Length: 302
Image (cartoon, rainbow, N blue to C red):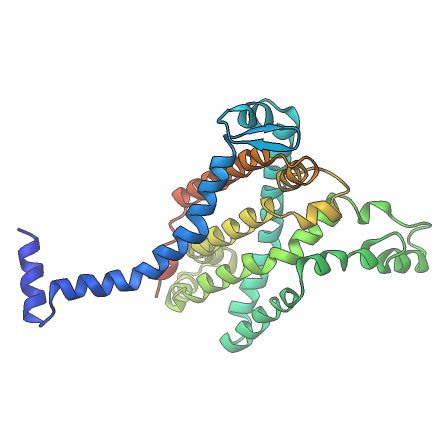
């Protein structure tokens, strides 16, 4: 019964149902083809390789679970790498949120919309160079003979170079922060920009101080942007290869472990199994995050 009124309405508007379906199909077909060719098919190939047999630098097309049993679930090194990777992702996400939220808040409430947008775009300028160059750029800054150590010794604050500035958890966090603060600040800025000024004025009218206004109005309404920023940062962090390879001091994460599996021994099944497992972890994080925060609010706010 519900389809008849819809069909009648289309007829009254002079729209043919078949033509409408053809137009909709034509619009979504390129997107479906793109995701099928460049996302689903590569993932299926990786999943296929994860069930193949590896022997002496060769991949044998015989199905087995050895890559999963020995290379993922039965390996203490892999479990440690996953714990370290997820821990780094959570810590970097929190650090980036601490820096990115005040930045977005300042650009939203203490600058004009045009100035805020321009300043936010300035954060994209480092992406004009490759990630490898951005990572190596910290060496002359944080190194034992770098700018910071030289300045500290010249001022007499330290008697020698500080070793933990580079090849440590600190330098790794700095590298991640430089790369991903824009991915946290941008969605938060968009979410803050959609907050109705009347709500903020109403809070002030009801004698709410700035802290109460932020806690009861600004923060809840900006949660969709926070969720999207956390998703971007966490996913990009745990999938990053460059920063942990050159700034962490040799601590293995899952991406570096995947690289070593196929680069040193051509163990494609094990690398594929690790890749699928990491993808499942990412999907689980995104699913749980969006179960807590409804990101559709970022598009419905006016």
